[in-house]
Length: 466
Image 1 (cartoon, rainbow, N blue to C red):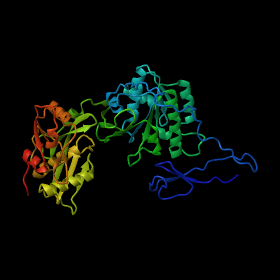
Image 2 (image 1 turned 60 degrees about the vertical axis):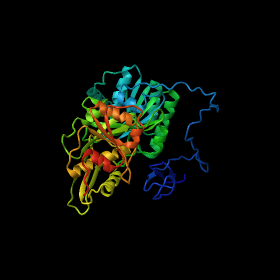
Image 3 (image 1 turned 90 degrees about the vertical axis):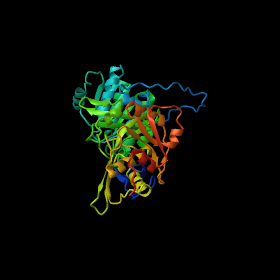
Image 4 (image 1 turned 30 degrees about the horizontal axis):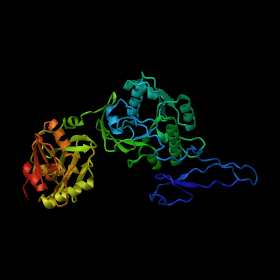
């Protein structure tokens, strides 16, 4: 019998090669090729070639059809009983879909899914919770703490995919949770659980079952230190929805975003609060995020950010102080660090602020991460307020994109931002003049349209060159 050859598999794209390379030949990633266990083959006899089994199942045998022949049907959503999760999903769960929940350990993935299973079970659905990391007793202890142990959901402690497939065919659940996909393995494969080949094959089996039987599969996925879901990149391509949990373990708030959603928008944001009773939805996050805002403190201003279709008011904080280091510090939390460097350069060049010898600290209170450019003007005004040690008016909200020439560019959904600010009692809004021109309805809130950063500083009373 010929000696089995070693192979190397890329942990990013799943490509296989017989030689090791520093860079993956397929996707170009560096240092991602890992040695895979050789496949064990048995000789059929002396001089006879090994009989290789089929790697995949046969096709479906369906015929090609035109669009006129395909029955579209109506897309239906089944609510999970958790409002914030339904918002991110686009209305609820879709039958036969495959969802992937990613996030750091301890962020609340298993807790949220256990609550979802409890709500679905109370609605009369057949639910199966498959755990590969914990025992059934550990799952019951968590369910008892969450008050979810009174439902009729089924719990299976198993991580062998052949046994799981057998139980799925036997129970025929409407919804199933796999916690987690990295612990599942195919016994006929020589590689260890969590390897690229094991994750790919396990997810493929679950996808076939979901599409064939109409069972909604929810997979839990761990993330790497870079924040990407562990395993081959093809895993994210196979599933219908990819949800990611964000948040600091030191804060009680958790953010749920959709990185991929074939049934809805990927711009929605769900806000949860981690409590002893589980993940509680935060229906009005603006009030919660501003409830602990400091009073009469410089370097603080309010921004109305858009997360999908939801306007959220957040507190932008800045601290500018004399530096005693050769290179002044720039520490940022919640916003892209490169964007802050750009805005500080604009303030120094266009507004005359001497920040070259100042330590600058920028923070978005509450653990929120912002990516939209409408936060530029609020960051600039917070930095100016701290640098001048002048308190910005408490009734003002600030929003707008800032360009390299110091101009304030237009932003989207200004009408919805204004409505949210008015609901929370803000009477004045500093915003781009270009966006104000496009407003179709009048508002009781006083608008202060500006064209440049210098004009915004003058409106807020913090303009002083030098």
